[in-house]
Length: 162
Image (tube, rainbow, N blue to C red; front, side):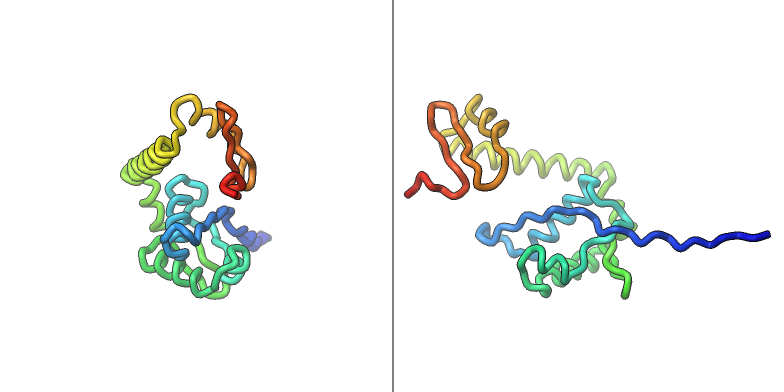
């Protein structure tokens, strides 16, 4: 009987879009940890998914490779990631506990916390109710002017502060 052995296809690196803010007071490596954990909680990445290499992620994020290594290392200590020498860094099977019901509640709680802060900050800026809904609906990304009802507007470059 003849049988063909096929090599498993190499796994693509998981697609996580990192968004780092050097001015928010949170160390970059902590932001990376948080975003990987959020990606696991929201099931955008799953156990077995390969993460970008330290070098490629450092280039992409324009940060020191040691920063990426520190984040990956801490997640490895927690059992969230595992590194296979010569193969890459993967989301651990142990990370599946992040997707359980308790973690779903953690994700829900975190969403409520972030949303609450956002709404409070908008109120502090004088943006409430329908105006806030319009702002969110019309927001299209970085460096875009966001029209506000009443003829006000702002953009991420704060041109109106000049």
